Image (cartoon, rainbow, N blue to C red):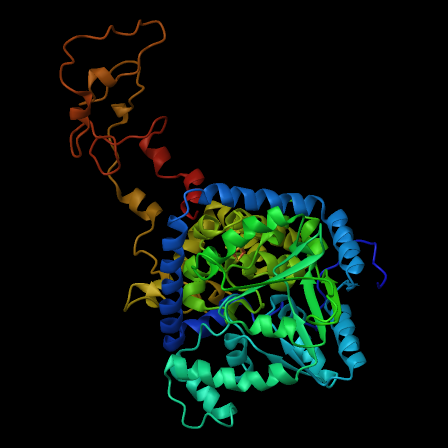
Length: 569
Ligand code: SF4
């Protein structure tokens, strides 16, 4: 066992792993939205998975109770993570495994590389694993002279295409079968005449991988769950490649985020019901592999479990954000998200895309490193409804936006927004300044002549027009319009004590404090509302002949300093 760092929680380090993109979400999304093929692929794939999920979830009468149970178990795990992890370590060790603790991606990669080197192997086969993608294990192994072969079909497509995963469950969701055929033709020696028939593609991948399975001496896996009470690890997958990796090689190294522990097998049972229906829309997972330590003569004889923090304790330290660690990576929230469906996963920059990525990545890295992600949402709430463990992603997004704004407010350099708001405040605080600004604004009418909208402005105002149009300023401002209106007679004031204004119904006169309220009559008489028809003499709305404003003379209405400040809101 390596030593454990007992200090303040730290964020996932920079320069390693795949939690940070090279551009902000709005910039990356613009590229993705311009790719029609990508949008077609995504729309087709997500709508298919959505339909399957909805059908199998509707079959379960106690689905909501299962969700509540999943939420409660995860809440318990987060509250008792320290003791559960120690219990897990004791149980794994007692059954012949070795547990390693990695504070971050750098430590985790170094541990795995050392373990592989100790076997003398130069190649490893891998089961699909988000944790190893998060820490950039393949790249770290490659730097150390070890080749990692992905064995999940979609991961293989991504690897051979020199691409990046764009979905938690279906990493090559952005590829259609013609594109996959082209990748296989390019990279597989025996695939030169391959068609785009799905079965042919799958058989080509099978033949390609079979040789890797049979020759690999080391396998690397992630883990969906770890049962603390017995030290049992669980991997759920759909292709059988995981089962091959977990049983054939001599050495098995499992890299697992610390939040994946569950207390008992009874708790595991809840998640094994929630996960397949939420992820692939299946009633039961096709391949569920479970192993406990080492069994002499059966399966890998050397088993290592690497427990990775990489920012997770920082997430845990935020009571409003820690529920992001409840995620069981089913991807249901991605498939229902209108933003994800249009942009795809690459726009998020992180290996965790979609709604869960928008709350998990900024918390693992520190909000300032993924500041645009909490805004990559319409806050429609579909992700919460779909989440099998009831993670309230919309509330968390708002919380992270708040953290981002507070962090910027504390910065010595004011943000462009802060500068703009200060300038607006200065202009609006004096009527004369506001009038001058109005006159300047009219120049803007020249820009929007054709479409009645202004679509491009120079910096810094371009920050607005890059994402939305600006309406063309009106020819007449409210103040100008107000000045041109005829002044009503000065006795139209509805609170005039001497006489009601002309046309004002007697029923609408204010009741003096000393006058008793009239008794309700069985005959309601003419409705007061009839006196308020548009255009009637008593219509007090702007534009009606009898319009008047309480407490103002016509002269006062021509100079309305308080309105000067309000018009521009
Ligand atoms: S947040 Fe919920 S819906 Fe999204 S991947 Fe995680 S468990 Fe699934």
